[in-house]
Amino acid sequence: MTDRHPSGPTDHALWGGRFDGGMAPGMRALNLSLDVDRRLWREDVRGSRAWARALIGAGVISDDEGKRIDEGLVRVLARLETGGPFEEAPDEDVHSLVERLLFEEVGDVAGKLHTGRSRNDQVATDLRLWGMGAGRDLEHAVTDLCRALLGMATRGVEVILPGYTHLQQGQPIRAAQWALAHLWAFDRDRERLRSAVHASGVLPLGSGAIAGCPFPVDRDALARSLGFRRPSQNSVDAVSDRDWALDLSYACAMVGVHLSRLGEDLMLFTSLEFGFLRLDDGYSTGSSLMPQKRNPDVAELARAKAGRLNGNLMALLTLVKGLPTGYNRDLQEDKHTLFDSVDTLLTTVPAVAGAIGTAQFQPERIRAVMDTQLLATDLADHLVRQGVTFRRSHEVVGHLVRRAEEAGVPLAELPIEAFLGAAPEFGGDVRAVFDWERSVEARAAPGGTARDAVTAQIAEAGRSLETEGDEGGQEG
Ligand code: ARG
Figure 1 (cartoon, rainbow, N blue to C red):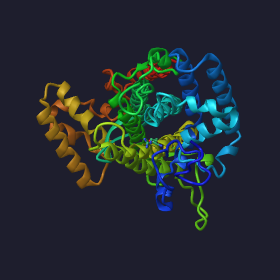
Figure 2 (figure 1 turned 180 degrees about the vertical axis):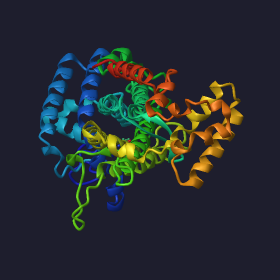
Figure 3 (figure 1 turned 135 degrees about the vertical axis):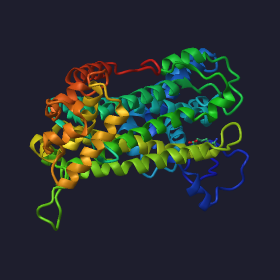
């Protein structure tokens, strides 16, 4: 096998018997994937050790051969841990690299390991093994971000700020309600990540190239030993199914979308014009030219990553679209965008969590920009409580708002006669409506911004964060 070198002079090629002459230099570069799939080395060795055990069980190799292969793989693992074998490795991909090293360790018996196995089911298995771990790591990271938001919500229970619709001041809300809005979005991402881990927990190994394995391997035991929930049901499907990778990529894109929305809020809220929040110095950056600048780069970078994550999802969707049944080499291109999405989030999410964990609300600044028109709905609700229809009270308050604007005074400072003249039902106590606390406390239905409703959300979110989940494979 090693004396033909179809893909390079020093290569341990996994194929070549039917070929004459070597691979064209231009093709060789295109054919290589080691620079990307090298990071699957742990999974490749792990899967190979499990496959060797399965081959012993199927009577394909003897106990002694299996033992030599396994010991060899352990030594290969140790060598790969040093990073040394990757340097100037001539191999096409990580699977070829691991097998070449195994030959170096144990000689010809290494040639028995690939019995009944194809790189098609091998790479699908390696990537799923990696994906289960990556999905869990991401869930931990997003959970930490949720904890930071929970802390921010707790600091924001007694802070009232404008709730925006159309980025115009709408109604007052507790700052906690704003922080929790972001938290719940990330909590849904945690669920999506768990579901992607669940989807990845199906074992392709034992599917061969396309038609299945001709040796009686115990695929249930194989699945269990590698931490999968179960083996795949169909060999043709198994070697080309990347749905779970799309689930993961989509979950990543959604985290990116949520980060970008949080980032946008952070940018607005830390601007001079809003001034609602102050980021810690550790998460702010300066300008090389303007000495006064204190930029929220963490939020901008978080916002920017969403584009990259969306692009990665789109690349993978486009990759699998229209592929004929079974494995196609196109699928080799499934890895770099998936790796990139996970890597991107594993650097971005902790930074945002740190920024949130140390950000401080600026209650005086918030109070200074709150316009009493934020209470126009409360005024209308006040009339409704006196028996006026909402349709009419909306109209009445609309007129009062216009009068206040024409007079150049805040709504709350219109003379009492203006209110009573517009609708006698307002009554003498109408001014009591102009109270931020009273407004938020009125929204006491579950999910609202009253103190009790917000505190209940905080408790519920805390409980949700305790269930850090592993709905995927078993630990293996
Ligand atoms: N490196 C390939 C991949 O990542 C696995 C090799 C399968 N190649 C093949 N010619 N069947 O998909």
